[in-house]
Image 1 (cartoon, helix red, strand yellow):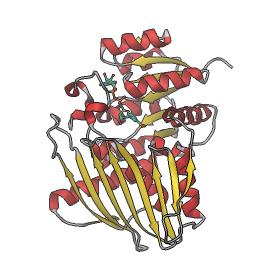
Image 2 (cartoon, rainbow, N blue to C red):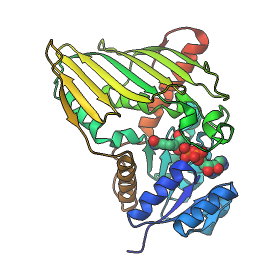
Image 3 (cartoon, rainbow, N blue to C red):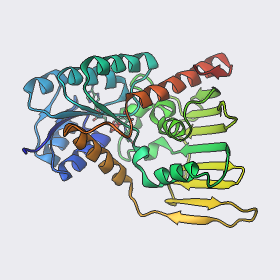
Image 4 (cartoon, protein in one colour):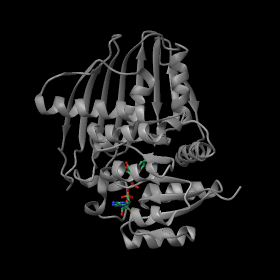
Length: 331
Ligand SMILES: NC(=O)c1ccc[n+]([C@@H]2O[C@H](COP(=O)([O-])OP(=O)(O)OC[C@H]3O[C@@H](n4cnc5c(N)ncnc54)[C@H](O)[C@@H]3O)[C@@H](O)[C@H]2O)c1
């Protein structure tokens, strides 16, 4: 079979990463980006064709799939023409800026029947899959409380790139902690399903010169009595990504650094640690493998549009709660 040919829309940080992984897996890539410097870097990295706009790129034909890696504001409007051409899409998270836009994309998927894989990539991270198994096995008994923390100073994300040029700084382009770090909302839904209600703060509180939000706190109630707190910020150093699950029979701690899970099921501080050797890029490789399998007719198994709609509904409720000062009941 000839090489799969993927159009990468948005050839910044994640677009280049998908480009490297897809080519390592035997595919060929072309790129679309409005910035000439980004197009030049992409063309040089992959000896690839590049395009300044999506219409010309799609019009040139010959693609087997499209990876949408642009700022969030453009996700839906760029997925739809690809789907209408019957091209399967790998869409970087989040689906969109708003739930209404995300629903437009869901309608286009239903209309075209073309598959879409959504890049909430932590679902492909083996230590988190292991945590999910431990929870399902009931290792810590009935889980009563979960605490999600993601704290990472935005100036450290793309060193060398002025913050003003990074879409994360811009509320208009869909940057900010709530949308961009919705990974942790997605994981909460993946572990526990849909909550019953939440109250939230979605704010800009740091001195970072950005228009997007940089601080999110949510208090979430589930119908079965489970309680969750979730904190996302864009000003914290050192960076931290961690989840603590407290059950009636013990505690599970997951952290990105160190790359481990620790389980304690006794009264004393006796922790059983499981350390992992996986590296960050591995989850992106796993996403690329699932996408290539979809191009061969395989199913979307790990993350799809319904998962993305679930996240968007929760983000919308968080914004409503912040604006109204009230706890919001989820449908
Ligand atoms: N799954 C993950 O862990 C993960 C990690 C990083 C980023 N992302 C997601 O990927 C997307 C891009 O993030 P990034 O960090 O690569 O940002 P980035 O700023 O590094 O790259 C975005 C690129 O899109 C280009 N662009 C701007 N307007 C465009 C348009 N209209 N059409 C096409 N391209 C356009 C920019 O010139 C830039 O090159 C975001 O949605 C982000 O949330 C996901």
